[in-house]
Every structure is written in structure tokens, then in C-alpha cells.
Length: 171
Image (tube, rainbow, N blue to C red; front, side, top):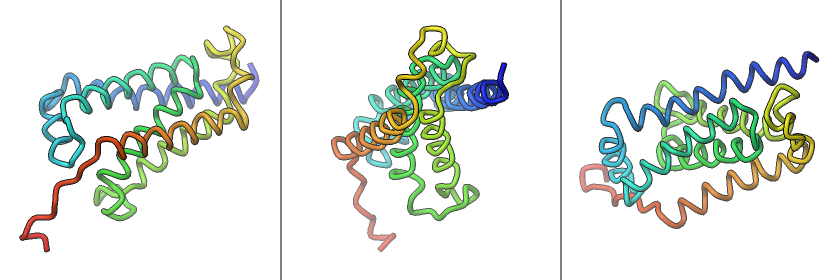
């Protein structure tokens, strides 16, 4: 195994489960889907339950695809789309640092998705075993990972994001 392939395997095995864990948490921890739906409604992602189910399912799906190295550029695009929506709805106005709910974490996850889409999953992947890895990386991977991911994220926002009006107390 080449060092690149080992590095991509390590990268995917680290990144994929982190993303999937966020979806798992939305389904089974804390407030579960109902709590996530309430939070989504409160920020303007309506209907909250639909978006909670969509976000949780997409996080698990993207995490599994990335971990397995299956349709890797599309799993990466899902990650980029998720992080685009998270950045816009929650993190963009709170500064850079994650300690203040800033956007550094979602930015780095999105960059990881774009880089993975461009480099491909490596030879220890289902994409390689199915002989589809070379057709979906490089500039094609960039177009899928960044273009489709950012485009889908902003399309979702345009269709569904309706932030609440500022309260009289916040003016």
C-alpha cells in the first residue's frame, strides 16, 4: 500500500464517523429529532422536523459513504452542503472561533470534504474496488464536492430558510 492510500484511509476513517456521529446524535441523543426540529424551527429552517430528519440522515449517509470510500465525491458534496447550511444559519455571524460558536469548525469540515473529493478515496476504498475512483476525483471531484455541495446548500437555504424577525429586545 502506498503512503497516499494509507493517508486517505486514515483520513476517511477519521472524517466519516465524525460526520455520521452528528446524525446519530440528532436521532438518538439529547432532544432527538423532536429537539432538533424545535431548534431548526427556531432558527428559521422550516418545517423543522423535515429538516431535522434530512440533516440527520444526510450526516449519517455522508459519513458512511466517506468512511467506505463509496461515491466519495458525492459523500463529500453532502458534507460540504451540510456545512454550508450550518455556516449560514448558525455560525457566520458569531465570529471565527468555535468557542464562540464561530465558523472555523464547519469551514474546516467543508475544506476536508473538498480536498477528499479532489484527491479521491485512495486504493483501499469501494470506489477503487468498483473501478470508479479515477472518474470522480481531480477537477471533476472539485466540481462535485465544492460546486454541488455549495450549490445544494444555498438552494436549500433559498427554498426553506426563513429567519425569525429580530425581536424588539435585540434592536
